[in-house]
Length: 212
Image 1 (cartoon, rainbow, N blue to C red):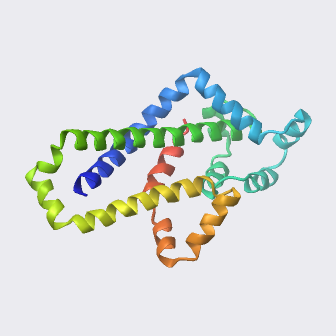
Image 2 (spheres, helix red, strand yellow):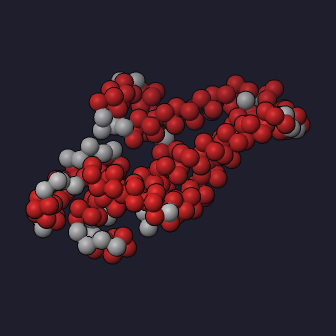
């Protein structure tokens, strides 16, 4: 149990500091970035170019309504609303509302992919290493923790995995299945508390908001 808990903590630390670099690496790959942005653009923009131009020329209140009606997690909607300004447009290299939304979401999606890829790689690597070498568990301190605090660490590990599941539910909260799971969470006081105090969610949103 202690080995698992240590692996989780180390993985989170690496993800917190390393995910932005992985995201930048993916963004520097024109093929990958263009594929992501094209997919987002098809999801966001209309087929009618005149309609897109009308949206670009719409006042801020209309653009706000458009964002609020998007089938996206609330956190992403809030981020889009907060950053819908000329400074962010310039930083992203866009000049219109529709291109801003597409590029912002493309960058956010790359950040999310980087978060989960790096977490899976680091956590999986640490688990394989600890099992194959069986070194960490033989260290005196870790061995003592395994005997004295196994239940506590096991509970902590369980909470981490609940938080990971909550992240996935949040990402798909705009879908029917995501809404179903959210309703189930809201009907349980304990799950609601865990969902509202998701430390992984805070780390992920910090990574997602690094769009530039």
